[in-house]
Every structure is written in C-alpha cells, then in structure tokens.
Amino acid sequence: MKDSLPVLASHLSVTLKEGGKAIVRWECVDGADESFFAVERSNNGIDFSVIGIIKSAGGVWGEFSDDSPFRGRSYYRIRSSCGQRVFYSETVQTVISGDVSCKFYPNPVDKALIVRTEFDVDIVIVDKYGKPVLNTHLSAGLRVVDVSTLNPGLYIITLYQKEINRQITEKLIKK
Image (cartoon, rainbow, N blue to C red; front, side):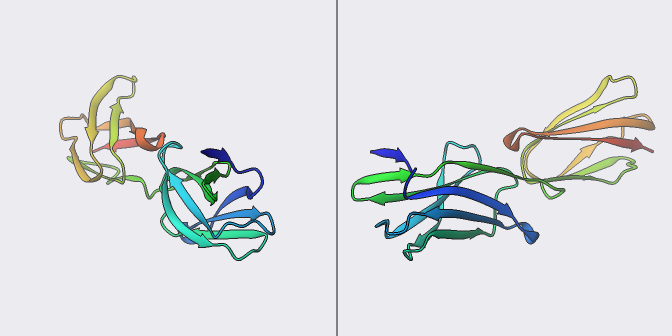
C-alpha cells in the first residue's frame, strides 16, 4: 500500500549550493517510528531511484547532500515505511542549469563546429532570413559538425535538449 506522507516527513525542500550540490531537507514528526528515510531522485518525475538512505535519529528534520544531481530537471522525494505501509513525501522539482550540459565552439567558426553535450541534442542553424540551412541530431558526448558548406555570414544556432527540456539559441558567425 502506498500513501502520501503528510505526517511522517513533510516540508521537503531542495537547495542548490556552490559546486553543483543539491541539499535535500525535510521535516519529521518527533516520535515517528521509522528506522530510515530513503531519498529518491528522478529526471522525469515518474521513475525514481534511491540515492541515499538516512537513518532516523528521532529528530525533527532530515538532510541529504546529492553531490551529483542531474543537469536540467531533477525531482526529489522521501520514502519511509511503517510496518507494511510505504509512505512518500511530496515531490519537489529543481532545475540545474548552466553551461555544463551543452557547449559549442569555436565562434566564429570556419569548417568544423565542436559540440560538447551531456544529453542528445538536435541542432538547427538558420540564415539571416530564418531559412534552415543545417538540421542534425547528435548523441551525447564530444561531436563535430561540418559547417564548411555554409557561406560566410551571421547565423542563428539553436540546440534542443529534449531529455531535459532545454533550448539554447545563440548567434553563430561563419568565417
């Protein structure tokens, strides 16, 4: 039997800290008889995995440091059990952004554009008239895109990372 966790653990919060850590905190009811709390994380809000087990100290709060949170959207919740019953806290979403998940260089570019991405990415380059001149899909990692056939000038490049619902749009100069 699964129930929400209105009494045993509540007021879940996630705070992002320097260095990319996510601090997960929750309040507990004093005297609750759980022996542990499981901290769970998901990148889609549906499929959760346990990332930490915190032994209950009988206090009024719990805390866990996620040293490697997902880039983009992360969802957190707390799971505990009382006898045969399993309880879940509310789910809290956080977004970790930054240049870590996708970069491209050099800019201005001559023949080859280097793309570094932690997630699969769709790339669309449009000319000054808004006409698409390059459309490609790249898997995660360090990849090279041939732009040697583009005429010199100003372009707009858009990188779509569907997995984390992120879009990056910037100017691109072709030498």
